[in-house]
Amino acid sequence: MSARDTAVPRSLLFVPADNERLLSRAHLRGADGLILDLEDAVPESGKESARRDLPAHIDRLTAEGQYLVVRTGSARESWEKDLRATVRPGLRAVMLPKAERPGQLAEVAAFLDGLERERELPGGSVGLIALIESPAALFALAALAAAPRVRALALGSEDFASALGVAPTPLVLTEPCRWIALASSAAGIGSFALPLSLAVLDQPEALAHAARRARELGVTGALCVHPAQVAAVNAAYAPDETEIAWARRVTEAWDAASDGGGPGVIRVDGLMIDAPVLRRARILLSAPSPANAAGHAGTTDHGGDR
Image (tube, rainbow, N blue to C red):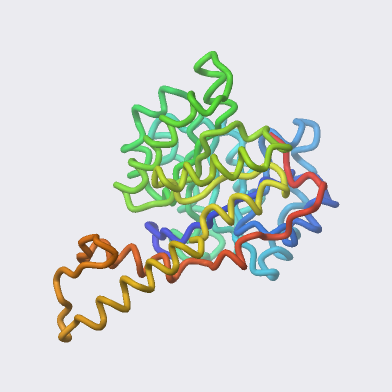
């Protein structure tokens, strides 16, 4: 995996790193990836035991084909301990909370350099996800996105709103989603953000609308704190039947008009189709289908907390 790998998932589900029962079933919840949470989800008294037990869970979940992320503490003393305990084959990324300065990310990246050499892992195999949790971080997004190993930017909606001194409403969170989408796209990396509080668990229509809105803004995925949120997120990021039908019409018309080098510009459904539009159509056809997007909903087990 290169340092600029953009193969990040649509849905990442938080799982408390000290909860044996939830960890044993996390791979069944339908999320594209799991965040093994050593920060907010684990009390200070339980962190050492969680660090001790987590490697076995990483090995088991890796064998299940899971995309695995560990959320560390934000202070250096904490993330050093967390990384020493969890960096191993199968770990795809580290999520650093309260990212505000590229220097923070550079320190973590340098520490990962040493661990990978020490443990004979491929250089750059563990990426970074910068968790944006304050207004100050918005004004450093470009630098954070360009920092070493950064694979994605993510919005921590509750902490962001708290730092702003307001409730995490769609009005407050839409603009940070937009900024994160723009900065991530410019850097060629992924993004995770929702214009909705992550604490919303019993409003599936509101969650589905927020996920669709995030996708329209250019965000590539979302964080989930409960398995019940996964299906709505996955479905929002899968093209619907109308989009797929349009993409097929575009690609078929383009191929029919092509002389081997491409027609340059064609007209489909009264719209001009050129190379950028064709690329979007082909991306839609390569995305997971709606039938495979729902995940394993219908459970009331908590997949993580925040």
